[in-house]
Image (cartoon, rainbow over all chains, first blue to last red; front, side, top):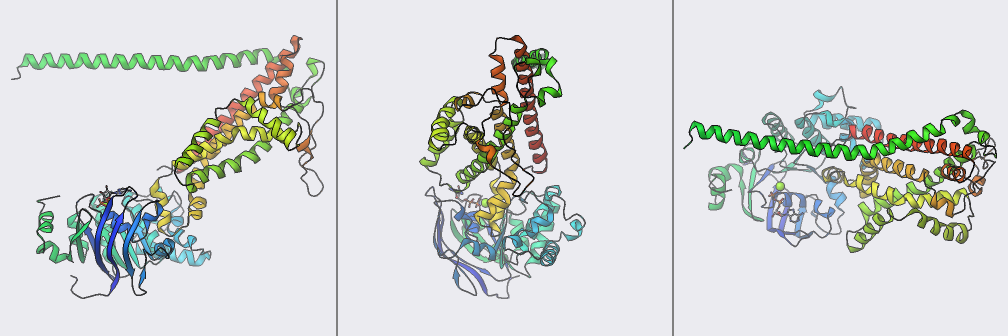
Length: 259
Length: 312
Ligand SMILES: Nc1ncnc2c1ncn2[C@@H]1O[C@H](COP(=O)(O)OP(=O)(O)O)[C@@H](O)[C@H]1O
Ligand SMILES: [Mg+2]
C-alpha cells in the first residue's frame, strides 16, 4: 500500500508530554507523518494516543500546567510547532482536527463550515460561499444539505454531523488533519462513509488518525503506530504491522491476546 | 433446587416488596405535593387578599394620578414612573458589569485560591441583607460621590444589589457550555476573544438574560435600601423626561431628580391611619406581584425559547 515513498510532512522528535497533574503521558516519541498518507495510531485505551494527537495542534495549551518536552517539526518550513515562540493559533490554522464525538456549533450548517474563514477575517460573501460549497463537497455532504444550508446543524444525523465537522476542518485548507476516533460514536454505515471520505482526503492532505478499532486502521491507513503506556512500540507500513509485526507486544495486541 | 412451590413463594415475596416500594413512592409524592401546595397556597391567598382589598382602586386613574391627600384620588403615577427610571439605571449599571465580571471570572481569571475566594465572596454577596446595601449607598453614593437622594443613587444601589445575581447566573450559564464546543472553536484557530464573543456569550445569553430578569424582578420590590438612601414618600411631580424632542434627544437631568418607587408608595399608604389608603396599598401590592410574576414568566419563556435551539 505505502510502498511509494513520500516526503515527511511532520515529525515528532523525542517528544515527552506531562499533564499538569505531573503525569508523564508520552515518553520519548519519535515518528514521522508522511505527506498525503494516512497514519493510524493504535493501542489500548489510556496509552496516550489522544495525548499525542493533541500535541499536533497544541490543544494542550488550552489547559494551564501542561508541558511539552521535545519537538514536532513541520516541513517544508522546518518549524518546530511546539516552540514557545510559535503561536498555537498559527499551528491550528495549518493543522485542523476532527473530534471523537461530532461537535458542531449550535449554528447553521453554513455557519459551521464558514467559521474557520470568519476567524481568519474573511468577509467576502462570494469567497465564503465558494469555500463552504467546496468543503461540503469535499466532506461528501453537499448533496444532502445544499438545500438547507441555513438549518441548524443539530438537526443532522450523527454521521452527517461528523462529516460537517470534517467540512469545517477542511474549509481552511489545512496541511494536516487530525482525527481522534472519529467513528466511535457512529453506526457502521456512517462509519463506512467516514472511512471512505478519509481515503479520498488522502489525495489532498496528510492525516493522523487515532482509532481503537484495529480493522479500521488496517482498512484506511498507510502506516500504523502501536503505542503502549505512553511509548511508541512499533511504527511501520500498515501491511507489515498487521501481517508480520516486528515486536512481540504488537503481535499480542493485534491478535487480541492482550488489550 | 427450584420447586414450583419455592418459585411461587419467591414471586409472592418479590411482589410484596414491589408493593411496599410503590407505597413509599406514593407517600413521598404526597408529602412533596403538600409542601409545594403550602408555599403556593400562602402566596396565592396573599395575592387574592390583596386583590380583594385593592379591587375598588383598579382603574386607569390609579395609574395616571399623582398621590393625593384624598385616598380615592390618589394614584401611582410618580411611583411607577420612578420605578421604571430606577430600573433603567439598575439595568444599565448592573448588566454590563455583571456579565463582564462573570465572563472574566469564568474565562480569563487563573483558577487558584484567590479566584476561589472571589467566588465565595460573590456568592455570599447575594445573601447580604438589602438594607446593608442601602447603608453602603448612603455613604458612597449620597455623600461620598455627591449623587444625592436621586434616581441615579437608587438605580446604582439596586444595581449593586443584583450584581451578584447577574454574575452568578452568567458564570453558571457559561459553565453549561460543553468543553467540546470550545475546543471545536479553538481547533479552527479562534482566539480566546473570538471564542468568548462568537460562542460563549452567544450560547450563554439565555441564561444570562434569565438571571438579569430575575435580578430586576427582585430589585423592583426592594424597599429597605431605597428608604435608607432617602426616597421621598410623597411626590406630586414627574422627573424630567429622559428623552426630549430637541437634539440631542437624550438628557440626564432625571438622574439627579428626587423620586419615589412602587414599594415606597405602598409603604407610605400602609402607614397612614385612614383605612381608605390601605385599599390603595393593597392595589399597589397586587400590581407589584403581577409585575414580578410577569417578569419571571418572561425569564422562563426566554430560557425555554433559547434552550430549544441549543441542546447539548
Ligand atoms: N487532562 C489530563 N490530566 C491528567 N492525565 C490525563 C489527562 N488526560 C489524559 N490523561 C492520562 O494520560 C494517559 C493517556 O490518555 P489518552 O491520551 O487520553 O489515552 P488514549 O487516547 O490512548 O485512550 C492516560 O493515563 C490518562 O489517564
Ligand atoms: Mg483517546
